[in-house]
Length: 607
Ligand code: AGP
Image (cartoon, rainbow, N blue to C red):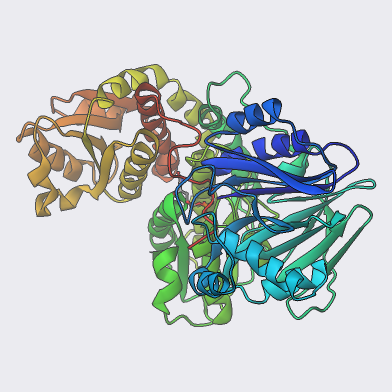
């Protein structure tokens, strides 16, 4: 996901913009740039790769100017190189953009007929020329921007600067988030509150369809019909998280180790450990009357929802319909107002998940958003926010957000079970007491890291890896494979263990490590049979189990990672930890960019 920063200030802005872009690095990017108005003219510096390359460019050739815009680019149209890096210029206009202009091809062809020459392959450059063309037609800068915005289709967050006015940035938002930061005699624009943290904690989030005229001492916000609108100015909590890695080598490592604490914080928000009850939350639905629960999300968040399906159906006898959001949003699922819908998202900005939320809202379904960013778009558009209290998750690979999402799901499923009369008071107290064990046991699981690092050393030599699991361990098998793929770039596949003999067993040979996630639970014996099928064909098994499972598994394995015995309700939360650590250490051995793996963004705000 691209990052945007703008400053209408009173001191040289280029270094401030670069610092703010550094706070957006976690979103993932492949090039960067800054533009200012310097001595009455537009000037820019751009660089491929990491921000350090842009800083070197600026050191060698500094930029002056007290107004500027900056950008970290996650390529959608055009290869990641300096030519395609933002800001893009057209005559007297400079622009940075996050999103996708869906009608850029037709606009580009029209502009080329009007004599505009394109220097990049990006959709963004179209917007710069559109604004420039309106200026040539006699419009003043603000009107030129507005007229250009109305010609766009697609998702965009934009910052536009004009050579002739060093007290003006126009910001616009349709999809990807954009926030205005209020300073003293200066104004800021950024993709989120974390970017603006060093400047201000007074933030106004633009809504979809808003565009803003930003000057040092004044901001005006309008909707797409040109009518002025009022937006809430709030104190952002994003500024309180001045995140850094501490003594960890990577953010991801830090975030893995934060899990005992944040799991405990999150559970404490949803269950009363003292009375042994799942808190009666102020929900826009009555679990006792809901006929179906729809769940939708992407990636790791989707897999949290998949675990949740097992819990809601087993503990509350509540049917769950779950789908990845990119499918959900176009399925046109028949869903009644007697249903409820949950959308799971760390960022709260994932385009497909947001579109799925809006589909359900259109159907009149009450909506809950399980999000880690309370100020996110999903949080603002849901009927109830169900926060994960994971703190900012900077590593692109989601870890602590996932286990906190599971913590929320487990608590909600217990709450639903009580409301629907399937969990008696006594059982509720037992389950909540078992949830209370999660943080302590997570600390014990993390102590297995040294052994897991040794297993990862071997795994790093693999070309393909298979992950197997049954029941709630099946989504964990999918998550383990996703983590390994996205961090180490090794091909990995997660499969329901019972499905092995229906095809994937053809893959098994001595070169295919098979990671089996199998606590000694209700279907452990079934999974043992699957492991025997693997071993019989020379497959190398890495078994992740508990003391009882290790004692009962008669199989020769390549490695066995033994977790403490634990209650079934918390196993999916804690068995996520070894698969996270396995993927992390494999990636470290592979030398990949662990916190910002290639091609990935922290939040995908485009389709
Ligand atoms: C997780 O490790 C991935 N980086 C990715 O699958 C992520 O979970 C997905 O893009 C959803 O993001 P969200 O939780 O911010 O919606």
